Amino acid sequence: MHITLGLGRCDTAQKIKDYYANGVREYFIGYVPRSWLNKYGWEVCPNRRNSGPVFNFANVSDLRDIVKEIHATGSTFNFAVNAHDNGVERMDDIKEMIDIFEPMNPDSYIIADPAILFCLEKWGIKRPIHLSTGIGCFNQESVRFFCERFNVTRVILPRKMTLRESRMLIESLADLHLEFEVMIMGYRCYFNDEDCHSVHSGAGTSLCQEVIFDRHTVLNRLPDNWKDVAEFMANATENEMFKVGSKIDLFRKEWLKNEPPKFPDYAMHSCGEGLDGMLTMTYYQNCGLCAIKAFRDMGVNVLKVPLRGCADSKLRAVQMVNKVMTAENPDKAFCRSVINSPDYCNSKTACYYEVEEDK
Image 1 (tube, rainbow, N blue to C red):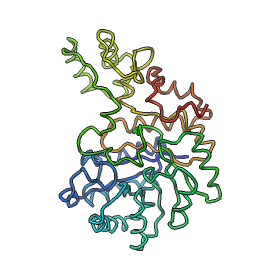
Image 2 (image 1 turned 90 degrees about the vertical axis):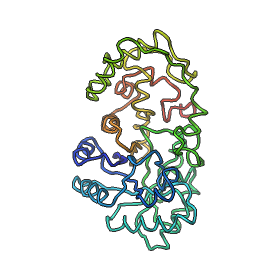
Image 3 (image 1 turned 30 degrees about the vertical axis):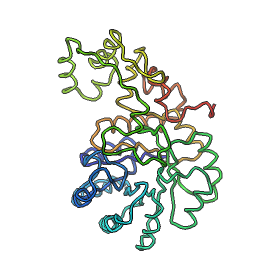
Image 4 (image 1 turned 120 degrees about the vertical axis):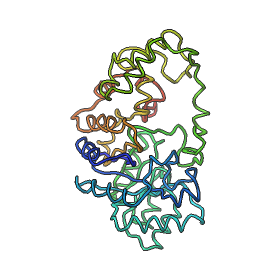
């Protein structure tokens, strides 16, 4: 079992070494050249990261440099071309991208649109295919359909599948000797990602976020020490900032104590022991650490940390996943101690895989 991580244009040679030291052996990369941006804008992205240029590489020299650093650590990389669907007018542009990727010898292509699979075959591309979570393979028949027609070597399980469903699917496909990959920390979809055509839109907040989260009531006036907190955040390291008793941790706890925002019932309500729940949610977003042991036991090969861009949280998330992944018995108590934020762990929206059906 190993970790796969998304890269962005802020990732450097030193960061690649840091990721490797913490269990990352594989990367996925998005590419959006200026010509694509001029034609379609960020709202139409070939790899489901429409939030701006920082999430994708934009020129070939940067791509070559990062691939060189990946290979220097003995790691592998995959190009993500996993938009859900593509109009026929974009196929020539995608073909140009593939022509750029091929000399770099990617280890696979991550694909969600069946049309791209047929196009790769037509273009003579023989590389392994990873079926993206966006293709929506919820059962063995859908997986077998693609495996019979294309060089599929891995299935990235839809992020809505429960542990029980994942186990059933993996067992039913044992004869195909596939690799299986699961999302483990970071972006979670509250609906069915594979059927969604609005998430990651260029409108700022995705439509699902407007539905799920109420607008929080905020204070009209920040506490008197807000400048001290801001200065601390600007100069503190990650370990200093995200630690129990840090200025930002105490700031959040005092703020809620004085006038709590009106959160929905399923979100964080209180500031108990450990790191503040909303602070943890802001940093880690969603977490599936408690499911790693179950995934390991059922034969999952790869844990995906689906973070890209320049977020400082990438390395810290990788460190958390690696700590659990390499532990001999990472039970729930161990995983919760790693997070050290009971309020976060008790939230119904924080956990990827904790559902009643799996108990």
